[in-house]
Structures are given as C-alpha cells and as structure tokens.
Picture 1 (spheres, rainbow, N blue to C red):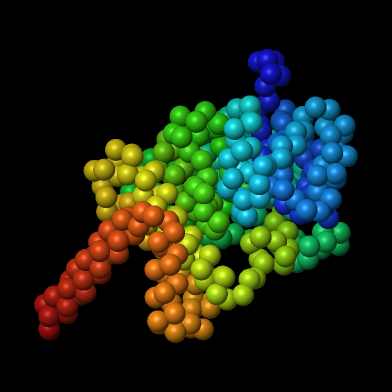
Picture 2 (cartoon, one colour):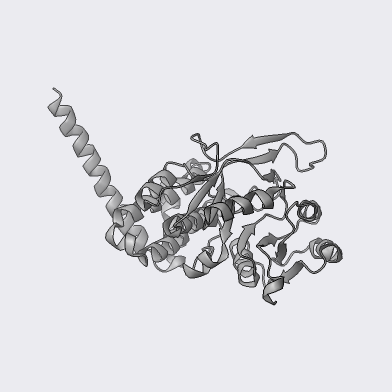
Length: 345
C-alpha cells in the first residue's frame, strides 16, 4: 500500500458466529461521516454464515474491507485483535466488536480529538446500550463502567503514572477495547498487544496503555452502541466448574502477562508498589466474577482447582510475590489503624 492510500484509521473487528449481527455493524461503518478508514475483520473460525455475510459486503467498501481468517479458534478476542493489528496500516487503531455498532460521526469525533491533542490514546467514558439484541425499536441508554467523575469536555489526563494506576484501581477509567482510539505507532513503539488470556484481556491491555501513553485523553460523549447478547462470549455461561476454572486460569495468565510487561518498564523497576496496585486491580475484577459461584465449592475442591489451573501457567512467581506484598501492606494498614486507635484514647 503506497502512502497516498494509507488510511487515517484502521478499524479492527474480531468475529465469531455473528451472522445475525455483523451486517448491522458494517452498515454503521458505511454511513460514517469520516470515510478515510479501512476495516479489517479477523474471523476466529466461525462455524455459521458470518464469513459469507462479510464477503457480500466487500464490494460496498470498494477495497477498504479485508477479511482475514485465523488458522484455529482461539476462544477469545485477544488473538484476532492482535492479528488485526498486524495487518493494520492506519495512523490510528479503533477496535469494534462484531455485534456492536457506532454512531454515524463516531470516527470523525474521535479523530478530531486525537489530532487536536496529538493523543496516543482517546478514551470514551460512556457508551450506548440496547435493551435487546434486535436494535430496531430498541431503547438506547447511556451507560458507563465508571461510577462517577465524568469529564464534560475532552480532557488530557495527568502523565503521573502513580496517579493513573491509582485512578484505574479505583475504577476511574473505562477498560473496554471498543472504547479507545489509539495511535498505531504508539502501540508499535511500546510493543503493546493484547495479553493471551481468555478473560479480561481488555483490562490488562488498558494498564499497558496507561503505563506508556504520554498523552491520554478522556472523551465525554458515547459513540459505541453496545448490544446485549446473551449467547455472546462475554455472557455465555458454562457449568460452574468450567466457569471458575476459566476465571482462575485468567487470574494466573493475567498476572504473568502484566508482571512481565510492567517489570520491563523503568518506572515500575523504581516503583514496584505501583505495579502491585495494578495487579490488585486485576484481582478485584476477577474476584467479582468468581464470587458469583464461589460458595458452591468446598474449600478442598477450590484448593485443588486453584493448584491445577496455576500449574498450567508455569510462572506463578508474580502471583506469589503479589500476595506476599499485599499481606504485608494489609498488616501495615491494620497496625496503623491500631496505633491510631491507641493514640486517640
């Protein structure tokens, strides 16, 4: 691709068994007010008619749509997203889920802000969600994964990594993949990819971005329409044993990936306590999922499952160090509380 044909934005879409929804996703891209983009769909070995639906759309995009097929099903979004990044040519990257949509001026809004701030990352704080998988006649509601503290205008975040990670730990950032526009060169320069974990890869990926981005901008307006789909990867339910094994494995792999990435950054070599704060954010998120079914298991069975899943990862040193440090920190907090209580008598 010569320089004249290089798009400003590469839209990367992982896809698996979404024949009923991917057409609407692509329609929302066709009607964008900003048209200087390419679309890269990475099919993760769909077993339905998804690929044929996408192929029918190829002529409508006049060469701006590519369909890439994975060699094997990965079971998640991390692998197809990484594949899509490798094929991308745009100045910016935008990830979109294949069953979601964006509003007609979404790319224009995000691109304008990114250029104005010379941003590495533009992060949307809110999104639209539908009350039904079928959007025709659906009620759209503005939501966020943040509890409060939204910006009202595009806002450049602090460059202080400690403050960023503390805010992330306190759920002051949205971590979903589809909420960001990212400068592609920034991703390459910092060797940022999605960690190969089946769950919460978005969360770990966001920690990477917060740790490396010099110019991180929060954007107040929702541009993404998130479709609630009960049988999606996110909302599907296995039996409880499979469910808890998957999340415990995710804890182990997330720790291993995040520890390896952060330990390679000079800031975390000087401030390991901030790394443990980031790891604690991962722990809290995963425990929220585990507690849904935790009480259904005996302590002995949980012990067996935890040992089995962590043994599959190979390197659990980061987890052991984390829990050792956290136990010390909690002991110090308890000690400080007792001393304060005694001094106030």
